[in-house]
Length: 191
Image (cartoon, rainbow, N blue to C red; front, top):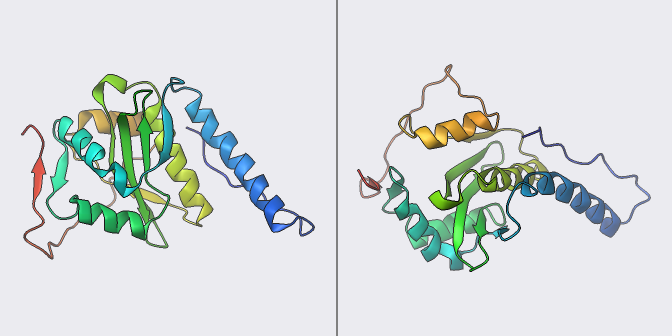
């Protein structure tokens, strides 16, 4: 996946609508590069809370997937989507089934990807890369210059994916957590 760049600043003579159209054309070019690799029967759109039940079912199908009792509840995901409108993405097949999903957010400084997943029978078709490209561009448009994610060390499929698409595994940092709510329990699917 090549680096994502935003269009150069449009000349001041362009109207706001013309500037928006220019940015949209550039965005479409970057995203279509990744989506060309995806079967034509798969479409992508921003995740809404209406997608929650199907996305949750997808999470439950993925062995080793960590699901938090509060953060990943319907209310928790709704709160996340409202805080980060338009950033999270789902992939849908021709039957209207969600076959991929990614939660994407930002804090004004760093973007973060959560729960990146593709249904097992749709993997290695470019769906994950296309969803990541959409998120990367949307974050870049918001002025975010760096994206972080956490992949569990025993998540061989996920770690191979991130390495394959050019992400850098960091060895110079330690990751720390502090639990503020003991009721927000992480349960792993199939473990």
